[in-house]
Length: 307
Ligand code: SIN
Image 1 (cartoon, rainbow, N blue to C red):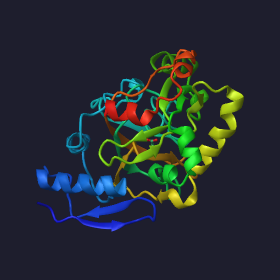
Image 2 (image 1 turned 45 degrees about the vertical axis):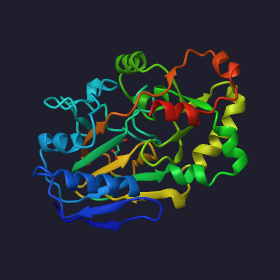
Image 3 (image 1 turned 135 degrees about the vertical axis):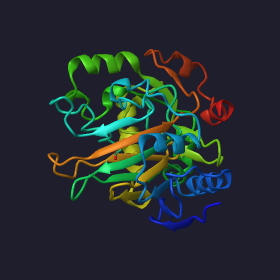
């Protein structure tokens, strides 16, 4: 078993793990120790991992079934469909469609019925300065709300909408139409119970349009408050990338944002594997009668039964 060295990187979340070489197959004990550290720190940074896409896929698979990237099939790695290419490098002489991926706070694939459990992002090229990614701890976001606010949001559902992905309008109109066709609006619980820790986490983001059963006008101030609260400084870790960092995060208890704080003419090239999460939520048809019919049903119980 590898002797892992774990060093905290942030107050709220994040730890660096050294003493492991992802080019080699890992024994079960090492994977279990990594998973334990992951669940504790939510974001793990494994520096110096000069791995191939095959090794990236093999390592990611040790933590669950990989998401097939059906929600975003056009960004798949040409030889490895489980790998998503997040890059600003031109493709066939045209601007890359993923050059602005992740520019608003989100949890991966929340606009689908199967939000990602985890993501493993590998940095292959980075600008001299900037291009950082920030992560926020959503357990802390939930736990620091007042008891009254928690009671109010425990039973709420939020409508996640792919058209709120920042920069989507920069993609070609045909692609946007296809993205919308594949990903209709989805209603998810605003509070999720983490299936491994049993802790409640806030599950809203800048990709939420409104709350089920509340009008846009009613939703707007609550959403504004929650999305700001969710990313308060004391919940955040900011990662400054080095080439061959592999960063893995738990989407069920965190949000993240890829900052556009760099010279966009310089390459930033990242590869991501996502681990499939549990089925969650339902396609939102614009009909709030289901929520009105059972206002007292809290999603703590719904989520617990799904996971
Ligand atoms: C993502 O949102 O998964 C991409 C994050 C990044 O490129 O830093």
